[in-house]
Amino acid sequence: MLEKCFKLKEHGTTVKQEVLAGLTTFLTMAYILAVNPNILGTVMNASGVFVATALASAIATFVMAFLANYPIGLSAGLGLNAYFAYTVCLGELANEANPFTIALTAVFVEGIIFIILSFFKFREQIINSIPQNLKYGISAGIGLFIAFIGMQNAHIIVANDATIVGLGSFSDLDMDLALIGLIIIAVLVHYNVTGGVLIGIISIWIIGMILQACGAYTAANLFPDFSNGLQLGGITETAFKLNFGWAFSHLIQFIAITFSFLYVDLFDTVGTVVGVADKAGLLDKDGNLPRVGQVFIADAVGTTVGALLGTSTVTSFVESSAGVAAGGRTGLTAFTTGCMFLVSIVLSPIFLAIPSFATAPALIYVGMLMLMSISKVKFDGDIADAVGAYLAVVMMPLAYSIATGIMFAVLAWVLLKVATKKAKDVSPIMWGVFVLFVARIIVLITNFQ
Image 1: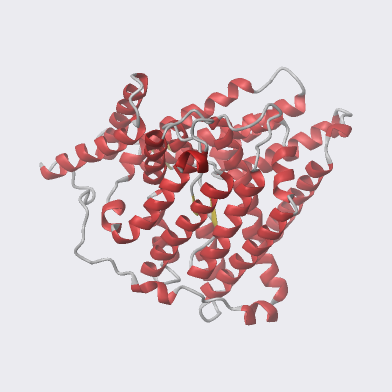
Image 2: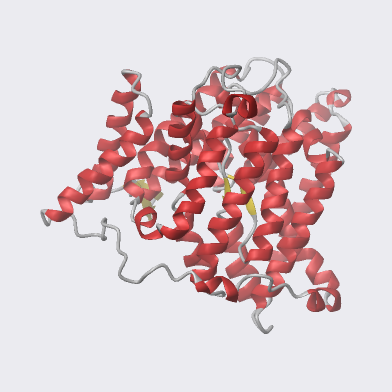
């Protein structure tokens, strides 16, 4: 049955390999189950957000598994949740009663729009119209971005007043354990140990718990804590809390909020899908991704369901690359990840106890693997291709945004094509994306004035 559903032999994989990959993806994504309630909990019921996030993630990832058959996990997107809570609810809508209901309505409408666009293959056309060189640059840029996230999570890279960022302290056990975890993963992968990334995550977590039991690690509790119970009833405070009345009476403001969610979700998903697909060898000979429309439908369904349950925009997670690095090639990886999101609802204290220093090595290692795509970039060819790919690589980690990296890449590519008298190379879709990014810049300028 699994073979017929996911075509494992065709993709050169096994059930064991896919399950281990799915577990790895989940463990690298599990932090969102702690982070999202913390962020959205400033304006909503935190326990309700936790349940909503787990359920929406599971549903969206199941759609990805069975409809697209790709090893990509989905959950509430970072950045989008912060925009939801701090910019929209505590900023623009601070004077409104229950502002989270308005923000959820905007997310719901965004999801419906994306479902419609998916049927018209709009997002599919975008991803297949991106030049090959830019796709490789996007993949490499995402690699640097997730490595940067991993290093931050483990305090290897920290904020620095003099140079903005700098090296953390070796007296910080989080940093030390993460570096040891990276070495463990690298050694296991070298010896072709199945599930090496997952084993590395669990091994360094166990080492941390041993150190805590000995009194050496005191920064946080690394052991699961069931003392507060499961607290699942909060979902009644977040589910089906849409506010269309306000949306219709403040239509222009509502459209602006919805567009902001729409923009970031669109290009974050495009960038993530390109990067993960390239790393998994899923792109065809022309650099296109088969069944990409189904990928976007999964994203859109997740966003719509998530809004109904009570969480911010659901999107494809770049951490799926960790599962790909562990051998994931089919929807069985995604199905496993979705199952773990369901399990997490009743075993939340266990999953929330996995420390960031244990998952950070996986992100850093996978970042290296994705960065290898830069070897495919042709820097000595067309100047538009070279500069576009370069900006994708450097802007994603430095601007801390996949969407921003794609924006700079596309804008530079189109402008240089025109400047070098090669405007005929720019497809109508790329012109459309160019206009969208110009509109986005105008919106940003307007907001800062």
